[in-house]
Length: 249
Image 1: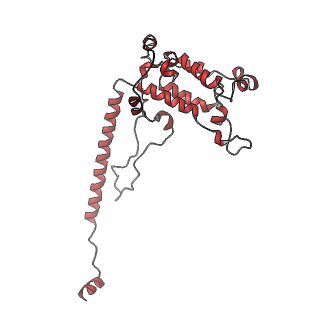
Image 2: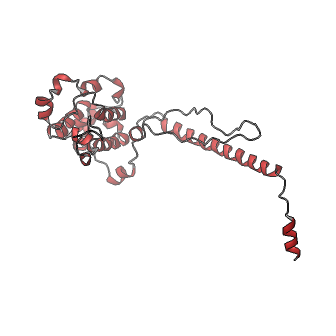
Image 3: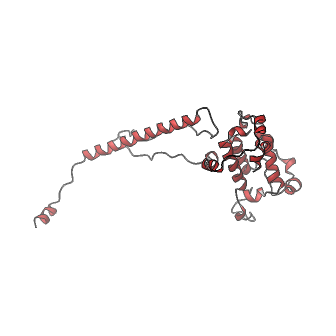
């Protein structure tokens, strides 16, 4: 809600302040919800029923806004993607432990670990070059029609499909010792681009999809033609003499 109402929270500094205020200071239990350092077979490993990706769901909601209104945010989708990874990497102490007391008094996180916000701020690729801070502050509240917002909600593929296998055509054994022209031997598909890319990225993606459709269409027609040729080469089935006797009787 504050991301929509206050343009300050759509900046790098403001978004980190929002997370620090609404999650860290209010006592969001990152250790309990994310299961940091706990295995399923360990004794005293915690209650699995308490695991819940609440912070990841929050980042997903912010991604939907960044994806639809990228010019209103100083950071891009890569920033959210990297942040979502380090929630579970335990590389930084910023999002560890269940409370401020555990972070500051018990574990001494601030003195023993690096700050995640400083790490993210040092990566220039995470900053949106099209962001105009003055124009964003002048615009103020980001209010869009709810049906338009919900209609454009999409899957965060860069996060949820990060390690998913790409679909490939099943290998078909070549017949008659001939190389099969429709077996994919060396896929050359380019990696998917992030949703916030512009400058004709959508048109390029659509053109690539159309090229893939034509390729698979030609592949299917080639396979169908070979099947028909094999059927033509096969001799017709012989009629059984017992069947002739049965027909005569």
